[in-house]
Image 1 (cartoon, rainbow, N blue to C red):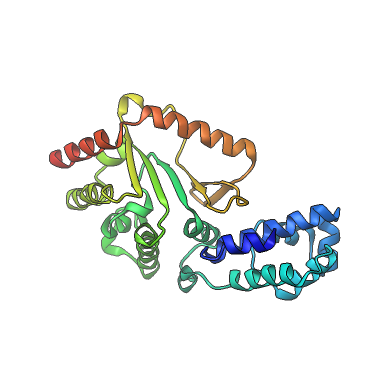
Image 2: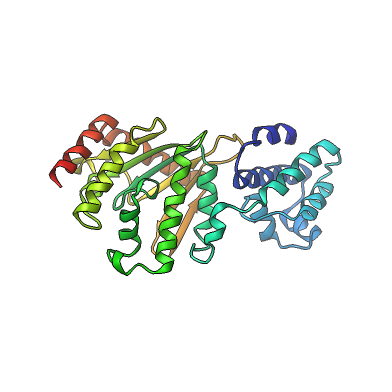
Length: 291
């Protein structure tokens, strides 16, 4: 099992590898009938640390992984080698770590998951999604409309947002489906010039084969969901779908089956309520001509 998983993850990101290793460790532990508490005791750690390891939320120490494999009865050289190699690769730093001084700790896991995703589905009620923002629009959002007073920290956050966008044009880029409330494309954040440039960017990015933008018109908005959210899907079958919701003081990951089901129902409703991609492009172009 581990060897097959290793080959499947050969080109995945460190975050995906970490999640795969964690999922395998959880599977092996459960097959062995060992509790998280007992596993934690074996490696001189807490039960909560074992939980974080199995979710792929923290890095691995090679010794801890080796000790857990022994505890779980994994003695075959090949299976141990694959998991230990993946654990070592999973500890590679992400590009965002050079922005650690300016990136909130709660947002770092999302950056890794976004890099690892094969499909990103997002719904926005107020802002253009970060993956589609222009630099000036991002600066207006981050500075709350005071772009001329942008601090070093604000400029670093703009740089992070621009760097994130590279994933849409890389080889094997994820598919992005962004659904926007009509108010999003009409709200002139940053002023007229910034607004027009942002709408032009939207029209441009929808020519990419992996990007779909749809707009929910006013008469059908407000019914599918109470707020903005993102759903991340992964190519590796052992990785679960993960939802994410921003709030004023941080972000929340949604992973329970009932939470993912609720997101799925909202996405189904949005698919019905939103204009088609082509009619959405026409509406964006119409707003651009009027701005």
